Amino acid sequence: MSELHEKLEVVLSKLESVRPQANGTFRSRCPVHGGTSTDDMGIRAGAKWINLHCFAGCDYDEIRRVLGIEWSDLVLDDTPAGERKPRRRDWRAIELESYACAVRLQHEPEVLNRLRFGHVIGESAGMEIRNGRGWSAKALERLEVGWDGSRLTLPVRTSDGKLHDVLRYDPFATGRKILAGKGKSRLPWPSPERLDPAEVLFLVEGEGTAISMTTVGLTAIGLPGSVSKPTISTQRPGSWQGAGWHRKWAERFARFLRIVLFPDCDDQGRALMRAASYDFDKAGIENHVIDIGSKMNDGRDIGDHLLKSAWDTTSRKAARNVIRELVAERAEVLVA
Ligand SMILES: [Zn+2]
Image (cartoon, rainbow, N blue to C red; front, top):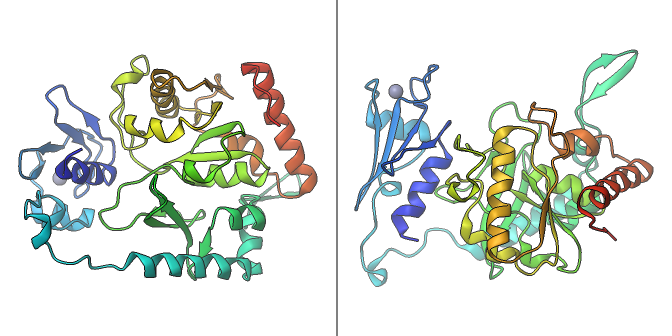
């Protein structure tokens, strides 16, 4: 993949309602003037740079400023490798910092309790409704999730184990829940290479759902959550072009004997998992898509249905059993 293509993916991941066009360009909602139209922004990658154009006339510099991207993020760097400036950030230092954050989280009982029990957000029939995620300290530790003082830190690794980025994640944020490093593309998390290939692997949407699945004792990977996904025909999974799944990722999953895919309950979520399943099929990887709520269309995911109330040993075991039964019944896959 060319460097410019990677830069294009980063730009697309920052835009809302991205849709590929027949001529290889993209359309999206304009991040500056917003509005109801999702057609105002044209995005086109030329040979040397990426062009962003608002048909309503928003200023190019303003578009860049709102998206938080520099000129250099839009232009192909064709300086020979030897003449490039040394890398600004020391990745080893960033990795050590993320380990320090992981240790810190384990010593922050208030943060751990908030992740588990959440805040009271309402009341129903005399019972408190809370927005906790049920996450266990043990699962967070296993996944190397840390705490930087304001957000969770999630180290993201490439197939060779190298640190690619550290996501900053606030599961209770009303705005952007996940912040990726500047200019960094999103990858499946946790890294497939770090998991036991003998276990049934669950592929879910979103890093938070992967933490929930790990909490109830299952082996899970989350595809990038909170990214804009293209509206695309759900009947043509091979044509997926969004940021949530890439064909080339399939090879990182080839080590697993069996993969169960749990789509979010909306058209986009289903299209995303069908695209992944299509590429697993082509790579000869046994996989099963299980739609847990084919009658629902409210975007709820497995986490909303089963996992948020799994906050102690008994309820976690119950959630795990429901999933095991579901998978045995729908896909004839036995989860240990
Ligand atoms: Zn505009």
